[in-house]
Amino acid sequence: MSIRVMLVDDQVLLRTGFRMVLAAQPDMEVVAEAGDGAEAIETLRSTAVDVVLMDVRMPRLDGVEATRRICEKPGAPKVLILTTFDLDEYAFSGLKAGASGFMLKDVPPAELLGAIRAVHSGDAVVAPSTTRRLLDRFSPLLPSAGPEPRRKELEKLTEREREVTLLVAQGLSNGEIAGRLVLSEATVKTHVGRILTKLGLRDRVQVVVLAYETGLVRAGGGAA
Image (spheres, rainbow, N blue to C red):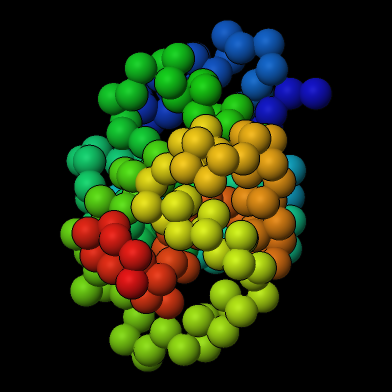
């Protein structure tokens, strides 16, 4: 079954380029396009989509707010933010809004295709270390209401799951976590899955965000 992709960008030429790349793939199809966030939300009401490629800077409704509105609905498609500049505050805001990751617009086609497949399968396409750099830079944008309500969520985790959460937030891959904790990579993957389920999170990106919001990890990536 093909991955149903929606392209959201106010530049027609860019959408055309992405559509040509995706059309050449046997496991993907572009089922919808939109020129801004408002049009994207309207289109999603009548079109089934698996992955949304979302620009951030658009007229009427930008990609960050569109991502927030899309991701708050049950059964929402995964959103992959496309940005022009690395470590862009828009990308940070997009991750906070529920996107499964972000990529630069000039990414090589093979990487873009791999990212779409990864997002569709439930993975995050931003390396946790990259997400950590974003959070370090834009930590002043974190909510000021205080971390206590979300900190209580961590009490749902076992001691081992808490250890894994901390290492995910510090930017380690499953293989690196396995080596650090002397576990199999499959066991680490199981722990990560349980963490996501217990905390109601979509992917590893949101684990990193939660770790910062609760103070589990300090700016700079160290344990609190």
